[in-house]
Amino acid sequence: MTEEIRKRRSWLDGFMAYALPAGLSESQVRDNIVVLDQLLYALWDLGENLIFAWTPCAGDQCGLRLLVAPHPLLTEFTQASVAAQESSRRGRLLDELLANQAHLPEEQFEQIAAELGLSPNFIALPFTPEAGLGLDLIAAIVARYGIRLVEDRAVILFDAVGFSLLTPLQQVVQLNSLSCSVNAAYAKLLDREININFARTTTGDGFYIWNRMRGIEANVELYQLLQFILADNALARERARRPESVPQLRAAFHVGSHYEFYQSEGLNPTSFSYLVGQVTIELARMIERALPGQILLGKFNTLMRDENSGEIQRIDSVDFVERTRRPLKALNGLTLAGAEIDEIACYLTGNRDAGGAFGISEFEISDKHGRPHRVYNAKINIHRRDGQPVYLGLREEDLPAFSAPLLNS
Image 1 (cartoon, helix red, strand yellow):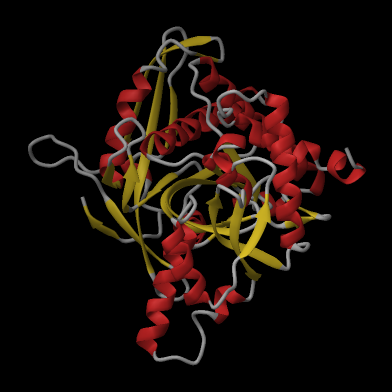
Image 2: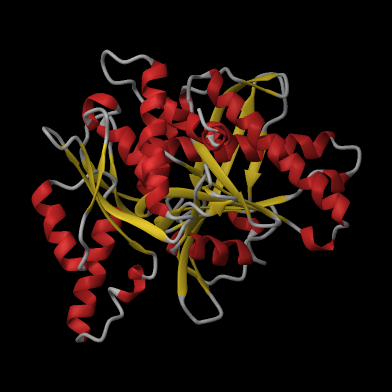
């Protein structure tokens, strides 16, 4: 094994979570990953090029055909000197291409190559793609050398209140405390075999956190992670000898579109992805207005896949919160600060009507450009058998200082 491959070995280890092809050992699959990755790495050319699409080949030519081009093609293709209607069509085509996670059928691959004006590259492999790695694993490896558009993934944004007023040393201590709460929450869910494949990037005074997996269940699990992170943080603040050692948080949760990409780190793509797009913009606007201790849920209405049935369902914010309640019952009995959890109640707040029923308040945040962002105020109550309840988020009556007009309730 060359020194270059040895240095990059830990980067490749992350792919071993995928199911092994029948009849192959982990060692054989690992060797096949190295072979494919080295070939893609050469085409990538230190980040100059992106892989836009691929399709497997079999028979006498065993390998992959790929569409590879310098990254400026992303904007040049849609911003070329063409009519507005054609530019719009090209934008939709490119979004559909980037949103596709898998390989393209051969006929569609040829059509895309013609549209983009690219001549396909061919890489020969010493194994058939499906039997030597599996198409899902190949897609994950290829994704590191391209950009993907994701429409249905949930993302959390945590922000430490008053972070910029702290000394650098206090800032480090608070970020470490938040990291510990993330790890503790993850460990709690692992106790119930909820294995969230989460990723995070820092914003300087907080974190974006998302589930690498997609679908309804994956997004619900991320909401569960949000609850336990906030609970651990709240209990840590109660126990802290000095209040500035543990951050006071505000949180935002939203589902929306974004581009996912892998920056260059040294001579390699990073092993973790970055997000940029509408969902991160929405979260940033939400967190700017959020009060200390507040939890905001963005208003969304999007298609998500049900991992159990394989069906695509349209889910909105209110329906999503309803869906989080049933899985929460499976978490009853977990311990939090030494006391067993009896119940976790999560809901969107609203005013009580004349009949005594609670509605759901919808607020509108306007950013500096005058664009509206619709949000809900979320509340989470964790009741413990032998401990005081943990109340997360703000009540409706705590919101007079929330600078967002109430649209309805």
